[in-house]
Amino acid sequence: MNRPQQLCVVIPAHNECANVAAMVDRLGAVLDPLGLDWSILFVDDGSRDGTSEAVRFQNARDGRVRGLTLSRNFGKEAAMAAGLRQAADADADAVVLMDADLQHPPEVLPAFVAAWRAGAEVVQGHRRPAPGESPRRRAASEAFYAVFRRLSQMPLEAGAVDFVLLDRKAVEALNRMGERTRFTKGLFHWIGFRTEVVPFDVAARTAGQSTFTPRKLLAFAADGIIAFSSLPLRIWSGVGALISGGAILYAIYFALRTLIRGADVPGFPSLIVSITFLSGIQLLSLGVIGEYLSRIYEETKARPLYLIREAIGIARTPVETRQDAA
Image 1: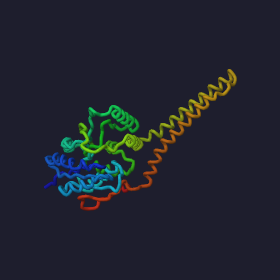
Image 2: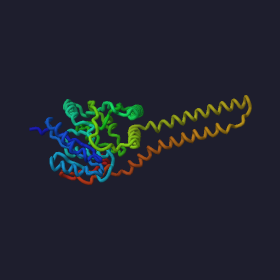
Image 3: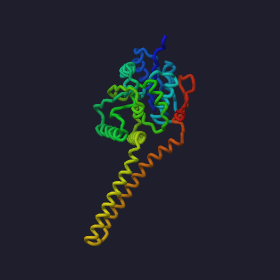
Image 4: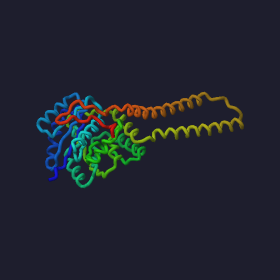
């Protein structure tokens, strides 16, 4: 007799204590009718509000609710990597990644599972525009994805989020990715596999506040572009060639003008403007190079992507990371 398909729902959580019980209740109500052997894995990313205690309480009620507690806040990308590794070690046939704040509605999961059973290996949630969303934030999001598509040549559309179902083959492929600067939404597309898109409406956050500040979002956007494109480095070769060509033409113009009209008195303002402009271009290009070098520096140190402090409801001690062994 074949065993039932195993589905593991991986939920990165940072200060989401108030949402754990509601998440478990809603997921159980949605997953029970699907005929799956399901489990829920919370990855506590260094919370300070008792998230691990809430997960431990839920595990005592239902052994299918489990948890990993990281030693500190490593970031959502590292927490997702920890969850994917543990789900693979637990031999899950499919893994769902979703947020802990219930803005990714569990009620969409039957559509995910149906697409997976129909042959999709990656089922990507696509967020519809929310009526109350800030126009400024929407415009910034669309601008980022437009730049990302142009630089990386990857068809990542605005609205793509970390709400996704991954077949075991896709999970194993992601677990082979060894980089520390991770942009998982881009990796979902990079690995290929048969992909189905399921649109959904973002729900209101049930409790707590988002920890993603504009500064963190900007840094995350920079990580995404740098992780998938070297074009920003190449741009400065073109800029340098353009400025050098302009300087040569300018020199030829002045040489001809001097031959025809004689020497002019040097202009102080034009000299200052030229020096300032070229200095700014040099510093900007060095800054772009520095961004790439800083990430190379992080990669070469080869530190673990995350460290596990505690495993809740997991029989054997999980492997913390094998990113460097792929």
